[in-house]
Image (tube, rainbow, N blue to C red; front, side, top):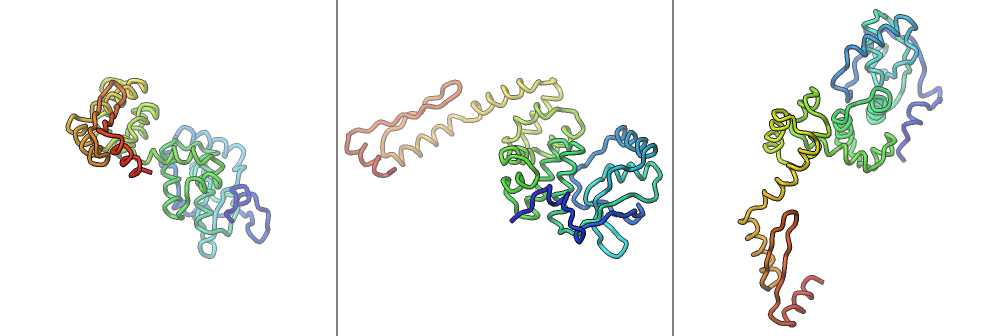
Length: 265
């Protein structure tokens, strides 16, 4: 049975963790950090707070060898503590496996440090591939719905160019979300148009809808017509309208209709 996040973080079993002051130089950065960018102004704000009040929230670490540790959660606090000139920081030492460490680190970022959607998606993808977790299982562990996790994971389908533009805040999530189901070349092409013409989210959605209609050529319609005629054994007519396609089957006799119905039952 998978443990909930709350049990991983707040379990008070003394055999599982203890708090101690640890030299900053003995703490290695997390190897499962989902956050890729850090706001320097907010880091400085946290640094000033630490200089004034000390580090109030312990880092979470695991011991990798005697007196050597790896960070599980608290990347911003660790960086700000270094900027504040601290030599030692209070740490919660957890004796847990790689999977639980990765999950705690991810949820720390989601709940306390507000990952952007792309970083959240990459975090889900990382623990999904490493530990063979389904969206439903990830949702249970991080306190999100299966639908939320599935929708966020779809963002990993964005091209590298779109991803970078989003990360650099050149475009917004609303502008690029409609691109998810397009191939990489088309994503990049429309991205250039979004930037050049400052397309709104609604304009991008409209463009994708029109694109989807235009993309189905007469040649493809002919292919579908031949496919249905082969399967149905009847004449098939396909009519294109503005937003939909209508497929009509014509049977020369009731016997042929019955034969078709029997084949698909």
